Image (cartoon, rainbow, N blue to C red; front, side):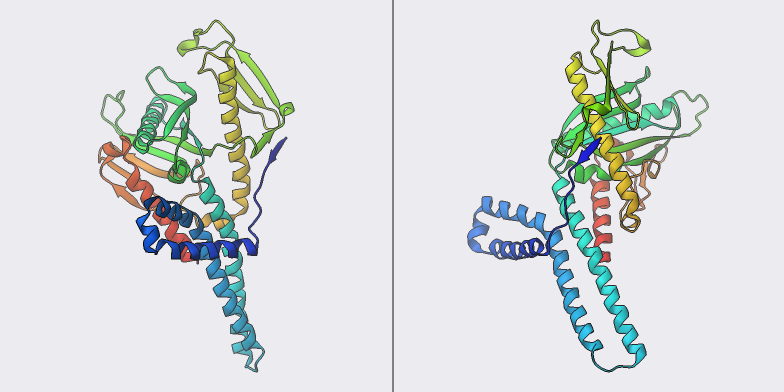
Length: 363
């Protein structure tokens, strides 16, 4: 049985306190004393950034409420039926917008807290056979190089390499400031168009790889009942099935309620393999729970840049034209080599900006 800790929506008094603190910080940061103190200025700027979304949206809620009061006062006066109907419709619209804003305040505040959360990325070869597994390796190198540019830490987790240097599946953890904020848009199907090295006639093949970005939950966020786990140990094996260890260090964990299986044999230590497998299991269970909740928020889902569904084609890497296209925002860049070398900021910045613009339009 999974037990999770959920956050309740902020009370009106808490939101008002955030607005008041936001306004206080605006005043402090404009004072000459704080501007001259780089340490204090940086601290206030960081706090202001965390409060800004919730504070600004709640300001809008309060503005709508003032408008609603004026309209309701107008209805108390004598007017013809058509005019009264228009006023009532405007009141309903403002109340509906406020409900949406209050829901988004809760989500925005939660997202701000998750910006520095660790993530686990899973890359799986899809259609295309060996070519897909080779491209999975290309994407793995792309993300690890991007992480290096950002100063993030990458940790190898369970993977299934192929004899030609590709991956059927590669799983790895990334830790660092802002990692979940910048990589959360990468979930989905990544398509590659190129001539495989095994293609004698020079024909372009299209292959696909799926990427999943999983938030790594803390133990207090996702508690798994040990009774729901079946843990098996066995001898690790390498390419072709040959034994690479004389001890039973490999670990297979099965989550019985859903038959979800995670295997790890990367380490020589059984305990280390078990710990890694449990981290991946927690992340996958959290993803499933979030997907179930996400499907209920259909209107909210339409406002996102991408749904995060692995079946959704989000990006194409075209080698003949040196072109990378992100289909969600219609962005095309003709510098494929640099992007595969980890230079992802232009794409990620554009995705973040597009999401921000859609949120602002909804206000």
